[in-house]
Length: 422
Image (cartoon, rainbow, N blue to C red; front, top):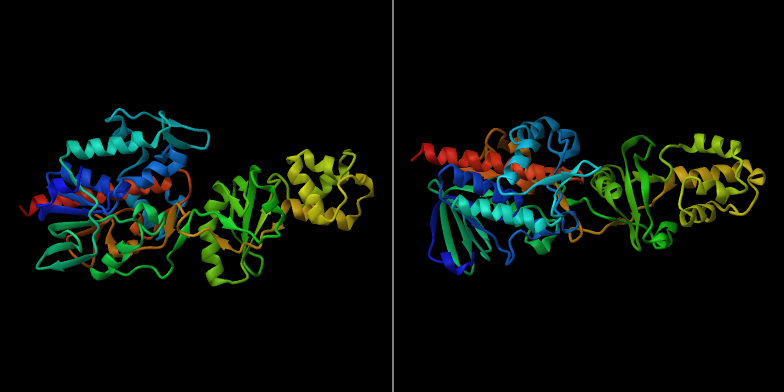
């Protein structure tokens, strides 16, 4: 829908700022409840983040979603929202618009078309059927609350007034999609706080230039990442696919770990990551297996578990001649090799930032909203949904499920309260 089609509109029942997953879902359910709903978005292309999600296939949700897959606000609060719109509801919603979802081995659900546009088209069709008016590009610069009404103002196009406001602006991840953090300023202007820690999450990690894994770009395998405190305590552990790149590490395992690494580092500068390339072993058990092995040399032994490129790199890193007879490898060299394979220090230098992050760590605390309506406890008539809140999930469709659930609750409640006051 073009921006010019609604240039004269300046008032509605419910105004939604942000036409991403949460914003569209909130708008659809507010409009289904009878409210006149307008969605404003600053982007020229609606749903950019949906279209790039899951490698362009859009990982709609996960077959098993619970609060343990999320961080940020308390698990109990997150659970309260998720249970109001569950995975079965997501599947049923998209089925209404002819979208069939398939479950992959990882538990992720994708459209059978393997095309994210299928998901966006379904959302836009649902919005059209509910008579949602999507106006874009309409960038909002300021939001105020005056005499019981919300006024959203843009420097180029004027103002829009509404009885109800739903903030679904996203966080700061993928800023080209339009989520540049402006929503946090709107929330603050309406009385809310925002967590001190606003950082990239689900983001690739950067290793030092000389780190051996950077020379293995393109190599992918299942591995375990372990986050240790400075005192050695295990803080977090993930086992999943890991991709070595020219800059460091990507893939599900490093992405899931990234926000926990950042959070730990802020509290404990000595916190650090190690990688185990042979998750079924630890240093001691791998050492015992090496002693008992009939492999001719260290390289042959490691190749029983690992690709040759990585096996050679580990030998080099440990200072062990890959061709040396396994029986001649000293105890000290065995320990160096098992440490390289099962507990290699990563010395992470940083992450690739919001430009490459899939979500944002931090946001408006759930303690500041009523969980049964997503309405602000501070400003009546204001609802919040999606990534603007201090909730971020693991890779695998969890963040979309949060968008659907929080959007459904916010939109349904906004419509209900609008209808009750008419």
